[in-house]
Structure formats: C-alpha cells, structure tokens
Length: 485
Image 1 (cartoon, one colour):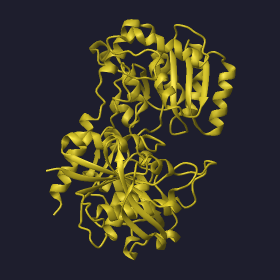
Image 2 (cartoon, one colour):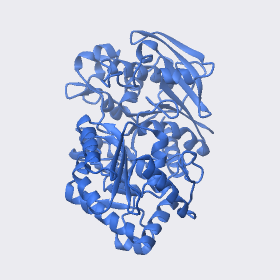
Image 3 (cartoon, helix red, strand yellow):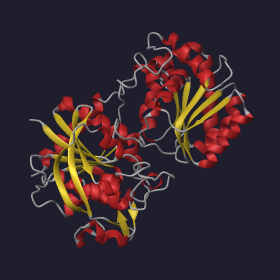
Image 4 (cartoon, rainbow, N blue to C red):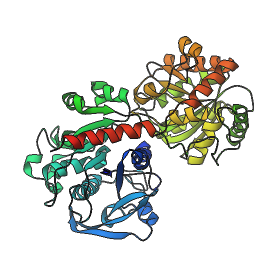
C-alpha cells in the first residue's frame, strides 16, 4: 500500500531556494518514491512559484486565511505532486521569500507563515476534498505551526494523523511576541508551556517540536549536539525530554545535478578513473578568478559569510594560507564587514586571493571541479551540502568536526590514509591555531601526490546519494503510521 505524505516547506528546488532546506524539500519526493511513498509538496505562492505553474487548477478557497483571501492550486515539481497556497497579499511580493528588496525581514513574516501553516494543516487534516494524507512532514520554523494547528485546531473534517518535524538549523526558530497570539486563531489552551508559548512569547519552531510525533535533524551528530546548551539554542531541554523521538538522517545530494562526468558547467568532464582530466578545470578556474597559474593548491570557499560558518577565523588565516603556497577563491555573501575584509585580502594578495560576492550556481560547480580543497570551518553545521559536493567532485573537504561535517568526512589521519579510506581533513575547535594547522596539513598532503590522488578517489567513491536516506525517512513514516490508532 502506498503511503501518502504531505511535505510542508517554505522553499524547494527547482522552484525557490535560499539554502539547504530547499535542496532537501526538493529531493525528498524522488528519494522516498522507491520505498512505497507518494509525497506531495506544499509551498507558498511566491512569484517564482506561481510563474512556474502550468495551468494551475484551483482545488480549494479560503475567504479568510488569517484575514486574507487565498486559494489552493495544484501542479507538479519535477514530476511529483505539488500544492501551492496562492495568497497574493502574503506572498506576491518583490524580494526574497523572507526579506524585502533591501534585505530586511518582512515585518509580517509571523503572519505570512502562520497563514501558510494554517492552510497546510487544513490540507493535511483532510479539509480539501479528494486529498487524504497519512502523515504531515514540516520543515523548519516557517512550516512548524502547521503541526500546532493540527494539534490544537484541526479542520472539522480532519482525522488525527502523525507528523514529523525536521530541524534544518536550530538557530532559526521564529520567536515572536505574545501580543500576536490572538491573531493566530488558536484556542487559548495552545498558549502553554507544552504548546506554542516560549519564554513569554510565541515560538513557531518550539510549537512544532512539541506537537510532532517524531523529530528529525539532518545528521546523527547534530541530533546529539542539539541536546547541549552550545547547539540547542535554548531548546535543548525540550529535545532532551523527547530524546526517544529524535532521529538524525544525513542529507543526500542530487547526483543527476552534481555529477562531474556529465556536468555541463565544467570545462572538462571527469570521473574517478579519469582524474587527470580534472586539471583542465583547475586551469579554467585560475583564469576565471585571475589567480596566478601554478602547481600549488587552490582552496575554495562557497558559503554564506557569517559567524556560524567560521568565516571570521578564515579571514585570520588567509595570510598563513598564502604564505605556505596556497591560493584562495571565494564565492559568497553575507556580513558586510566580512565581505569588505575579503576584498581587502584580495588587494593584499593579488593573484593569490580572489573574491566573488553573490551566489552563482554554475560557478559553484566550476569551483568544486577546479579547486583542490574546499574549506568549511563552520562552528555548527546541521548537515552541510558543500562538503558533499566536494566529495563528489574530488575537491577535498577541510572541515570542522561538528554536525554533518563530522558524519560525512573521514579525516586523513595515518590509519585512514594507510587504509585507503581518508576523504578529507577534519579539525577540532574553530579558532586560528586549529584552522591554520588543518590548512598546513592539507598543503602537506597535497604535495604527496599519490596520497592526494588516493584521498580524491576515496572521496569520489563515497555514496551520498539520497538512496539510503530516502529509505530511512520511509521507514520512519511507516513506523509512525503503524503506531497511530
């Protein structure tokens, strides 16, 4: 029998993306399909999403969805079922999904995503004729309130179904003041410690974690880390109280989009048996970033420029990196002071350090194919995808030992190198000495040509497709449905 899941997400590739959440929400339907699961994704009706719909068909209307008119329309996302909450007052806006054209958060984000969650709860609970689901799966704070609505204010036609709450990043919680609670259209008993109340206000993510039948994170190590004050961001007590329902499932990558043997973005395609062809991509990367040609290693960074990502420590290490023969190519954006500091480093080291501010999907492919090592010095990283792309492209990951980085990269210590299983370089503690030492280790390994090739080959042979993770999600869904009366 086919299990029917409603996946509730604020973004999903290929329609709308700001981060890794979109990659996961976009990949899950295909990942679980071979395991007897039909997944329908529900998204907000942003301009890009509405534009991508071909002949949208209206299935349901709301005269007042938290005060605004809305309708539910159907479509497809990569061949899988798609539902869209078309509420123009909430989502038909210039700018991004969460910010305006100036990069400022929309002031009514709480209302926008509460409305989206209310609509998703109606759909999951059976209020839309002809649509019945066995389980609701919510992603991050923007969708978390759907589980609270299902718990405290289910649609009249609804039946109780199990649910899953996935944390992609505990740092983003959707915490708002108590004054907005009356506008959420929840019963008074929902404003309680085991409901939506959080430190005297309303916590969207917290509400979803309380209401969910099971909680997942995007790596086993992160599932353990969020039980501690350092990573739990104030919710570690809740996670500890529900530890038996917390599961860590590593993200996969789309191996059709990230395949160096078939990637149209590359100067030269290559594989694990044809690594020599990879050199053409390195030469092309040197030219594209105006780096001095040479045999030494090129480190690449593809990242948001934030404290979480350890970018401040990387800035401290640039002179050391260049001093031992490395070069650096960076693509990213974020903190303005960090952006300016990288520009200053590029001026200080012309031909050795090059910076592109912004995001360019095709360029990120070329950097993974032409760079020798990718730096990911994150202070915390629920899963991380750039290191997985690096593994697939033979761009050796240099990562902090945290979260999904610890779960997906095997450190090139002596035993791992001798055993032929090393896939990258790990380091403990995001500070200058640790990162500088990891960079030095990487450069030393790079000049041991046979060892370096062996690390690249081991990395490229690693299977981080969605096959295993898709089955893990399908098994979790099946167990929760079986346990529900």
